[in-house]
Amino acid sequence: MTTPKYNRVVLKLSGEALAGNDGYGINSEVLNSIAKQIKEIVDLGVQVALVVGGGNIWRGISGTQRGMDRATADYMGMLATVMNSLALQDALENMGIPTRVQTSIEMRQVAEPYIRRRAIRHLEKGRVIILAAGNGTPFFSTDTTSALRAAEIEAEVILMAKNNVDGVYDSDPRTNPEAKKYETLTYLDLLNQGLAVMDSTASSLCMDNNIPLIVFNISEEGNIRRVVLGEHIGTTVRGN
Image (cartoon, rainbow, N blue to C red; front, side):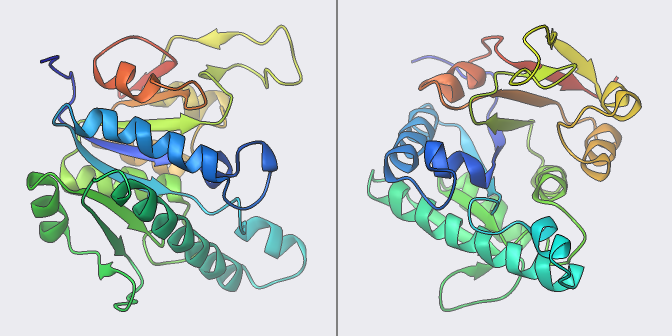
């Protein structure tokens, strides 16, 4: 059996990744493709915690641009992440993978509350945990949630899956054909150069806790497995 490089990971998915080329909502083909890729690493014995954004349904920043109160807009975004998490749970369980959705805002009829020790126990039992509703408070992104939860559950790495973007560039490769891709970076590089990989709070958390980050393209099937097995794809960001 192939031995994975990482035994416990946090997989960060953007909400936009679930929309695929539709741009909004949840694309069932993309959802099943992601679930299939997750199953590949679960079958290797990797413990997986998922954090998913809600931008395919609602972005808090778009609400504030319309004059909405920031806290209200962010709470709406947290609810969007719960919808995405339930969709991921359904897709994973249809493939025979036991999962638990845990939310930072209590809604016991649909999910468990997030409890650190319970989350770790689920992982140890081979269940995928899906961590929804951010960290339960406004003004923090799901990137920050990924960094916080990775530190709490002692994950070895954060895998940041991007939609049709295969790493970190010095400028937007979709608009600049001369954009340079980085193979490796430090979190200080992200902060000093203002690279829009994750927000500064998340970068600082990862740097302080020495949690590596790998940014890669999830649109190419099999990439999650390649990353977990140690193949160098995308961009690796380290603490120092």
